[in-house]
Amino acid sequence: MLVRDLGLKDYDEVWNLQRRLVFERGAGEIPDTVLLCQHPPVYTIGRSSRQTAPEGLPYPVRRVERGGDLTYHGPGQVVGYPILKLSELGLKPRSYLNALEAVLVEAVKSFGVEAVTQRGFTGLWVGKRKLASIGVAVRAGVAYHGFSLNVNVHLAPFRLINPCRLESDVMTSMAAVLGGPVDEHAVTKSVGQAMLDYFGGLAE
Image 1 (cartoon, rainbow, N blue to C red):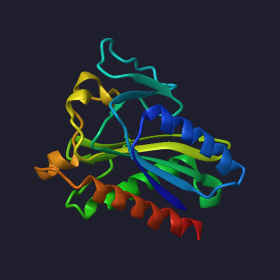
Image 2: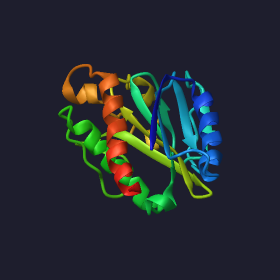
Image 3: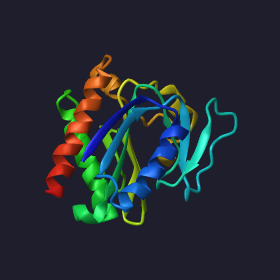
Image 4: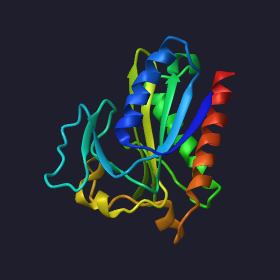
């Protein structure tokens, strides 16, 4: 498995890169690959979602292939796009979502954040607040899209929407949980290592 830290990248650029890598992974031209990055402010919504974006949002809205509903991406949020051939990992889509949750739980634990999952929802929670969101797509057996983990991201843009059809103030961040800013580079490294530890083990 290859982990690539892209830094701050425009959403559309990484979206196009994902779709190219999906075909390359399906053809066996590349190994499983994880893209980690941050985005300039943008809202995204799952293609099959019945939720609509409110008018007058301050940032672009993209309707994309992933599952899930409306959410926000912005600086201070670690976004991960694993391009994985699920059959080679012995995973079905549902078990893959559970695996991503387990990866993120481990990734934030070393920073003193005790995140949990909630029955009936995807993502990570701290108390009644949502820390990370997950939404994936699968094409020809290859998973793409992925997860977003709130590190130091400003939460105000979430309050302009109902993230994942939840209350507008449901989101939190590692910084909010811990009471101060968190090293985003260290979190990105922790997420990448957790991906390698979990999925690298499955692939052996």
